[in-house]
Length: 57
Image (cartoon, rainbow, N blue to C red; front, side):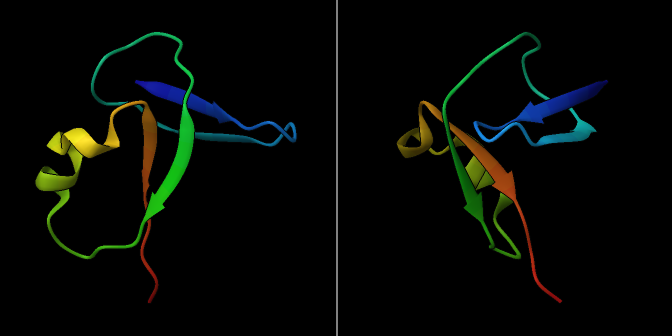
């Protein structure tokens, strides 16, 4: 399902949604790990945050 990330400065980013559906808000953080995606998704320390997976080539 297609979803949108709208940040405070008005920028809009389109992407694929997984997990629960609906409108939400939270602190946007970035994780640059190349492994351990499952652990990151289920880590309770990220509660209330929107985790964005990124990596650099």
